[in-house]
Length: 73
Image (tube, rainbow, N blue to C red; front, side, top):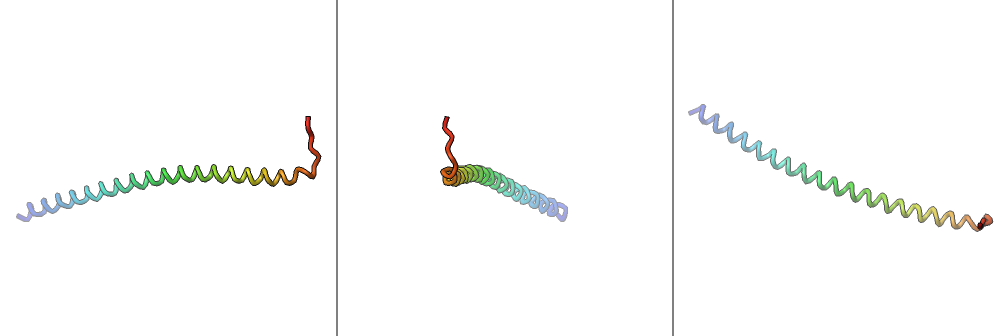
């Protein structure tokens, strides 16, 4: 009976480990999806900041321009 009991205990352990691995795999996929969305949001934010920097630099250049004569062709 000991051998059968040990075999059943081993099978139970394997099944529990398989379930744990499945849960971990699902969690890893969810983390990957969240990371992809975060990367997209980061790219969008970078683009917005770049545009704002351009606006600020353009405004600063415009304030400096009247001191210099304008060349028109």
